[in-house]
Image (cartoon, rainbow, N blue to C red; front, top):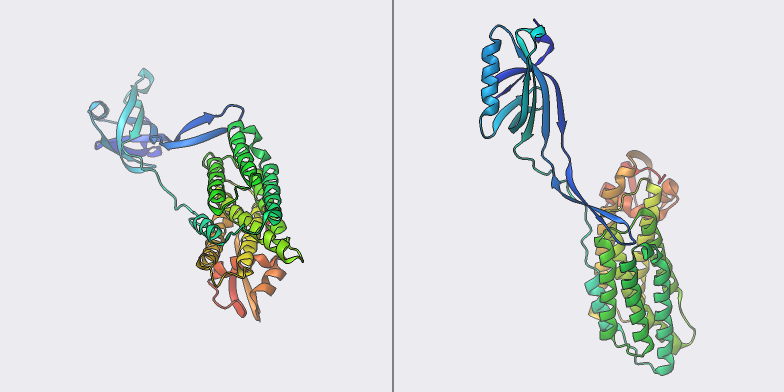
Length: 402
C-alpha cells in the first residue's frame, strides 16, 4: 500500500482523492495583425479559460467504491465544485480524465483530470489615463485671435513661417516611413496644407479645418500603437524644438513683428494638438529606464511651459475670452500630466523618504536632488505640498533618472 500521508487531499462533487501535482494554466486570447511594408500589432481579445491539470491517486480499504464514486462524479453532466488543495474552491467543468490501474499496485489507481474553470473574469487594473482636451479650446482661440489682414507683403512672412514649420514636421515623422500607408497619408495632408497656405487662402476657418485634419492623421498613428520609446522621444523632441524656435521669433519692425505673432498663433495651435498625441501615446509605450522616459517627459513639460508663456505674453488676453479659457486648459493639462506621469512611471524608480531638517524651498530642493527644477511639480504632487516656499520634515521623492 502507498503512503497517503504524503499526498494532499482534494475532492470533486464531494468525492475525495489525493493530489500529487497540480498544473494551472491561463493567458489571454491574442490576435496578431501584420501590415504591408510595416510592423505588427498584437491585440488582446479577452482571457483564456483557466485550466487545472491534476495528477493524483485514490486507494485504501474502500478503493473500489472510491473509484466508482469518482468515475460517476466525473461523468456527470454540467459543472461541479472542485476543492483543490492548492487553489481552493472552484466551479469547474471536466474536460478529460483517466484512471490508471496496475497489477503491481493493487488497491490504488492513478488519476489524471483536466478541469476548466466555468467563469474567468478579466481582472482590470486601474488605467492611468490623461483626459484633458486642449485641442478644442486651442482651435477656438485660434479662430478668435488669428487676423491675417496685414497686407500682401507681410502676409508672405506668415506663409513662410507656416511652411517652414510643416517642413520641420515632415523631418520629425521619418519614423513612419516603415508604415507606408500612414506615412503617405500624413505627408499628403502636409503637402495640401502647404499648397493651401501658399495659395493665400489663409482664413482662420480654412486653416482650422486643415489643423484638425492633420491631428486626426496623427491619432491614427496613436490608435495603431506605432510609437516606440525611441520614436516617441524623437517626436517629442521635434515638438520641443518647434516650440522654442517659434517662441524666439521676433522683429524690431512693428509690422513684421505683428506678422510673426500671427504665425505663432497658428503654430502654437498645431503644436498643442500634436502634443496631445504624444501624451496619449505614453499610455501604451513601455519604457524600461527612467532616463529614456525622462527625455520625453522633459520635452512635454517644456512645450507646455512655452505654450503657457505665449498666452501670458499675448496682449489680447484680457479682451479675448478664448485666451483665458485656453490658459486655464493649459494649466489643467499640466497638472493632470504631472499626476499621470508620476503614477505611470514611478515603477521605474522607488519612492524614497527624504528627511529635510532645515526649512527649504521646493526649487532649491529639486535642484540639489536632481539638478533639475522642472521636477518641482512632481515632488509637490507626490507629497500634497501646499506651500512650496517652506518645506521640511519627511517627504517622499523618486530616485534620480537612471
